[in-house]
Amino acid sequence: MTTTNRIQLLPIISPIIAIASALFVGAILILIAGANPVTAYTALFQESMNNYFGFGNTLTKMTPLLLTSLGVLVALRGGQFNIGGEGQIYLGALGSALVGLYVQGLPALIHIPLGLLVGFMFGAVWGWIPGYLKAIRGVNEVITTLLLNYIAMNLVSYLVQNPLKAANAPSPYSPLIAKSAQLPILPGSLAHGGIFLGLLIAGILWILLQRSPFGYQITAVGFNPTASAYAGISVPRTIILVMTLAGGLAGLAGSCEVMGLKYRLFEEVSPGYGFDAIAIAFLSRGNVLGVVLTSLFFAALRSGANVMQRSAGVPVTVVFAIQGLAMLFVAIALALESQNSNLLFRKKREP
Image (tube, rainbow, N blue to C red):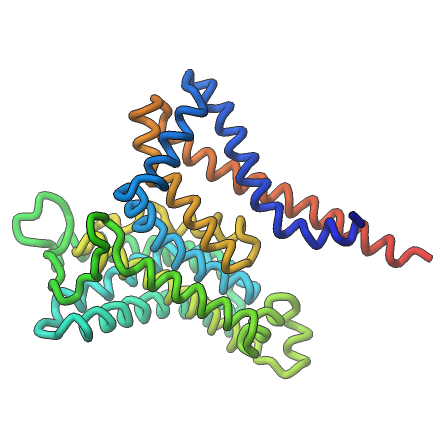
């Protein structure tokens, strides 16, 4: 195989190698913890993938990971780093909760889409703010999205502790949303209809990014905004658009948590899905199918972690270490890919 072919295949095989390497190092950590890696991984993946109830739990955790990761991916394709997925999840959850609590008397056929739409809009506004500041004012989107996370989280915390708090609630959470605003549940499991929404959006997004002028515009701005501006593409408008869309997708993740799983707004809507989504998007190397598969992998880790702890005596923290190791190996792969690309470029220029 030539050097050129190896470089072309590297973006495809590097995530697989990264995950395999992370699992291998994770096995060493399990051995250090005094447990059997085979037993631990069997318990982990058998519970999360082979068991019907466990797989339903995996799909439930996959839904917010998938939607938020797609948002991060869209922003990355446009050259923007959306670190605000966590806050956008909170805002989307808030929007859907308000619809479920205060909009009454609608049939489910209207109430559910309305709740999802408002959740998308709330998240989109939270993505539009850093997009506007970056495009018009030149403010770094990493800083603004990160700071907006804390505003969103504290806003939801205040609301569920005060005006939205359920009567006689032992902890901060809102009353139950209307039945007509709740997503349908797969029989015998925790999985809800949000997973189908996530997969549908993934398919639409793949078509838009790969087969439409809209996708070409985003990719062009992400690769070279200066050349894109010379080609007649509005770079500020594209930046605002991708950040707004990224926020909306993360907002849908929060909507699914409220409408499909918890049926009320909690103080801690997300256990860190917005930050996991950053790892998933990078691990997937900008590929929509990769985001789907990697979201499933991360969800399986989360779903089977407690079972692994009970069955094999392995701390749950090992799962988070595996996630971090996967990111580390991806970063190494990216560095090697960049080095090999530079080497190939120099070779081509040699007489």
